[in-house]
Picture 1 (spheres, rainbow, N blue to C red):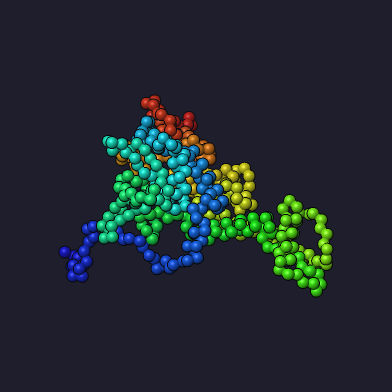
Picture 2: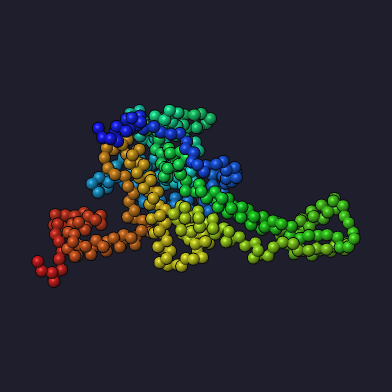
Length: 401
C-alpha cells in the first residue's frame, strides 16, 4: 500500500464507485436578474424578432440541402432504415419539417426533442418533434440516476416518458442544469430586445411621429380650456395626418403652429441595430451579409467574397449542427433500427461547398499523379468505386526506379 493510499484511508477518502448527479447548479455570480427576466418575457419565443428569425430560417433552408446517411466501412448503406424513417418521420410531414422544428428549438433553447412511436413489436415506426417548452428531463432527488424520465405536458396532462423513447439533442451543456443544453442566444437577450425596441420606435415615428410632431398654441394672451385643446388636437389629427398630409388650413384666430421633433439624421438608429445584428449572427455562426443584414453588406463585396461567406456559414453554422444531430442519432436512434454503422451527413451535393470539393479532388489528383497514392485510393477518396486494375501507382515518365 502506497503512502498516498494510507493517507487517504486515514482521512476517510475513498474512490468513487458510483456516480452521483447534482440537481440544478448555482454558480457564484448567478444572482437574480429581474430586468433580464422581464426582457426574456417581452422577447417571448423569438418569433417577433427578425434578427432571430432571419438567420435561423437561413440555417433551416441550408440544412435540408444535405442528406443524412449511415455508412459501413466508409460506404453508404443503401436502404438503411434510419435515413428512410427520417425522410418520412410520420404521415403528416417530411424530414424538412422535422429538421426545421429541431433547429428552431436547438438554437433558441439549446435543446430539441423527438418522440419515438413504436409498434406492437417495439419497433420505432414514427418520429415527432416536440416543442421544448412541453418536455423536461427529470431525475430523483438523491441523484443516483442522471435522467429517470422525461415529463411531457400535453393537453393538461403530464406524461412520463422513458429516456429510451426520447431523442434529446443538446447544444453543449448548461452549467445551471447539466442535463440540458445551452442556447447560443441566451447571452444576447439585451441585444435582441434592443433591436425590437428600435423597430417599434421607428414604426411609431412612421405612424405618428413618435413624439408630438407639431405644437399648436394660442398666439398672445389668449387661453383655451382643456376641452377646446382636445378638440383642436382631434381636428388636426383627423384632417392633417396620414393621407391628408399637406391640406391647407384657415384659422379663425391668432394661432401659433411650431414644428417639434428630430431631424432624420438624429433619428438614424442603424448603428445601434448593426451591433445587435452582428452579435446575433455571430452567435449562430452565420455572417450577417449572408442573410442580407445591413451590418454585413456594408463591409462585403460581391463575387468571390460572398461565396466565401456562404462556405463560412456552412462551416461555422450548419456543420456544427450536423455534428450535434448525427452524434445524438448515433447514440439514441440507430440502436433501435440497426446494429451497426455510423450516422453522418453527406454534403457532396451542397452547392456552397462545391469549391471545397473541387479543391479536394485537385489535391487527390496531385497525390495520385505524384505516385503517393494508388489510382484506386484516389478513386475511393473521391467517392468512386475502385476496381482490381486500379491498384497501381502512376509515375511520371521522367522518374526512374
